[in-house]
Length: 322
Image (tube, rainbow, N blue to C red; front, top):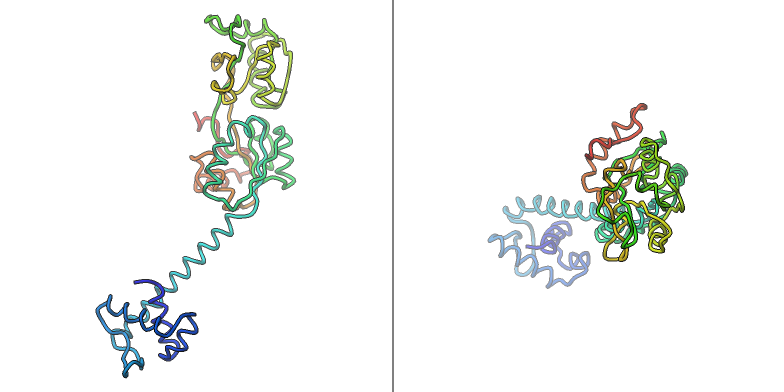
């Protein structure tokens, strides 16, 4: 049984059993229409049309009962096609992401690959900036989604979703004094020039907080927005690097030694932000799920509703990710 057979039956009834007209409507031949009807009758084991010679003259009693079913099946098939077209239309166009360098370079590639595989008709536009710049792009409607670590949650016109937690690590050249196996402390770090992120980027606030609470004054030698820049200068021997753990790639960062710093600096939360009070397109929900699989459409919608309360500045708490 196929849809062409069902269409042949429906159009035959609609066109007063005139197979020549049916063939014209279906853009096929009269023998083709006759064959489709005959094959369906053989499959069903009953006769749908009365005949006078080779000419069809009406519906049999079984045909009268089957015709409404045929009509419903074809109507459902058309509804499925419309739903498919609507989905393709919704999953097309452009989606603009605004992210910090670390997120764009290290966290986003896997999500972008997965999203593109599922939605090849969507053009992704990627902009990079500081958390404050990302917030401004969202407010100005120049970005659909913002991804950063700090600052986004401080903007009341945005709703932020916590995606995942991450930590910092310390990078030194091979043979460096800090790689001697002794416990790593803030006091030992402060003995060397430090190379890390600019204020406002990639958890820098937590780095400063840790030194301040320990009453230790670090030697900040070089500040950058780009982890790759930090690693380059560490490799040149200009200082000790503090970077996001996701930025260290052993297979590429040869010559650098990574030291666990989870006990020194508070953990960080990567947040995804959207404009408050605006409905999200289907394509936005799809990208959110690709970037943070636990954030399904139902979860996001529930959190957006909760975030609609004036006193709620963020949608998911950091504790929920622990």
